[in-house]
Amino acid sequence: MNKLNWIAALSAACALALVILSQALPFGRAGVALAGRAALPAQSEPLPHVDVDAQAVAALVGSVDRGARLYDKWWGETGGNAPAVDQPLWALQTSNKRSGADTWRCKECHGWDYQGKDGAYASGSHATGFPGIFDAQSKSTEELVAALTGQVNPDHDFSAFLTEQDLADMAAFIHEGFVREQDYLDYASKAPLAADVENGKILFQGACAECHGPDGRSLNFHTMEEPEYVGTLANDNIQEFLHKARFGQPGSHPAMPSTYAWGWSVQDAVDLLGYAQTLPEK
Image 1 (cartoon, rainbow, N blue to C red):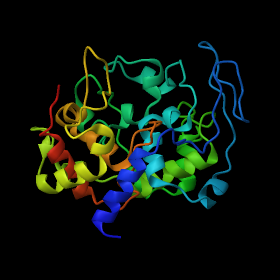
Image 2 (cartoon, one colour):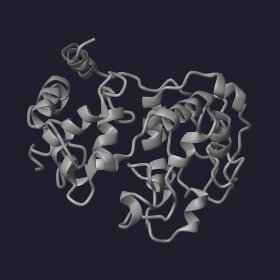
Image 3 (cartoon, rainbow, N blue to C red):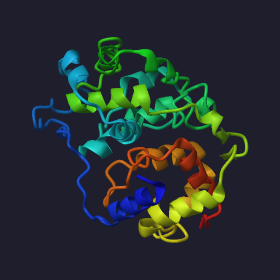
């Protein structure tokens, strides 16, 4: 399918309302067990553990783009409630002052560029000192399941919250989904190393303007007092923009399409970033 057909398909996808993203079972709020998952603990209780069949996970077909959205905010993608307690490993760092649900987001420790302490989160308010996940690309699905379900480190246990399909999707993303963003982005200037802005404009008008508007301001991602639009994000956080442009937004309604799933290249997403940086920020 050529690029124009991809664009037409994306435009149609953007126009769909109330699309249910999640195909995973939700998990419960504190003290309540739902759909076969363990109940979330109260603030003072230890997190529950659920035994997972790693071989069964490895036999599933994983979705790279859904795994990327789980990496972003897994409870947004599954449709569940976020944990209220801090992720246990959070106690090992003191520089990042976030708490509660934020501490459970994969991206909060490992970064939008997947490099953790060696990437964009080497310093600043998001810095934790935790490593990235590039080394995990060489691990088997069974090894990744072990790491994600507390078998390697009991404090890194997501087994109560992620289904076997969720874990398969996460493994697919880790194996196939991410790239070294320094090959495409200049971190110092917060700009693409090379972008075809005209191509980015064509892609935006065909695939994004239906929902975001011709100037990127039809959807406000933040508040009326401090609005955040496409142009705002594109100029403020190039790593986050590239991740979301490629894989979509967890739990959005209508569903934000994944350009990765539609066959766009990384360079197409970078071109989109280049054009988005020309759009109004306020």
